[in-house]
Image 1: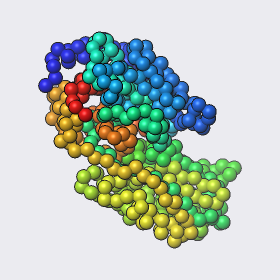
Image 2 (image 1 turned 90 degrees about the vertical axis):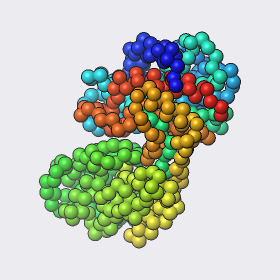
Image 3 (image 1 turned 135 degrees about the vertical axis):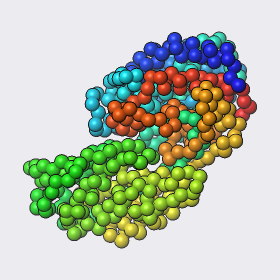
Image 4 (image 1 turned 30 degrees about the horizontal axis):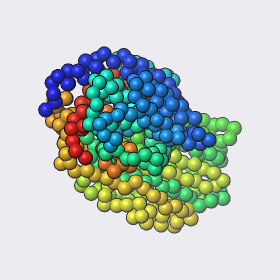
Length: 464
């Protein structure tokens, strides 16, 4: 049972800091922190470095110690009675802005109680909330049993090597939660692996250019291919723009983008072009076998087209999407991103994929994946967080598992916890993570801040 006096203090704090939270989210989103070319002192390029510096500067205003770990990751710390610490971790890097925005994605717009901008939801908004969590406990003037750290990563979207570097330099937390998923507690995450599907070198091609997609873990909403003019006829088709250029005939597909882990309701623009090219005999005889395999890939999102589908009954079934395609010097390469349950693994999937592409002269290099992880819902930590969430919200929810990958899997003991309500419906003008018009409600942020503060207080009562 949450102490009523303590909760009242939290609610008063949340109300008093509402406008400051909103302004800090806007300021942090304004830093375009897409991964760039590494350089001295900038392991992930200038954008993530700038966002990390900005975030640490924000947190330092509240009188807590801040540390920058080689521009890989940083943290703000509030000392407790013990040096052993509990932590939150958010990321300040973002995926590329992509297409479909109605305004500058790095200038937050406030519409009908919603904040819209790249990173508002994933994950800069939550990062700001963890700073204010530290501010709350600092203002209470008490020394908590455990030290608290709010960690801020800079490489979540492209590899999570920031956490690897951190754990080489610093002792791991006793427990960490990342507010980078849905509420309530996410107690399991699927495995993740990406493969590159290469064609043979095509000597007789009908394609001039085919380079589309923004990131391997993003379902593309826009893709284009340019065919040679002699390739054939180009009938009109729904969702496609067709125009003749100096280089050839350009076909642009408008799909429905989204996060690789959540393909339901999306429409892959690359898959639309592959289907159109095959239906209208636009690929050369040499190219056809490769694109016929890609058509099987894009026809479904459960991997069954290429025979790698899997379902263990614990997690939701495997998902597989094509995120980026490239064409260079006669060779095509389609990147695929797979989220898999416990009854398959990268070696098994490679053993199914590779022979199919080798049979047409292509190849599929082996790849290392992040293995699935699962924590029992009966774990006292999980139960404490679930009880807190249910009491604060008045709901009766249960822990869940996801296909997305968060920082939690990289620590000895961790879960994802918030900040989005599970299964919430977004207004038509708001997109989810990795999509255009990404956004989150101000009311949701305020509720999440209350939950995060109270949950950290309850976690302080446990033995680890």
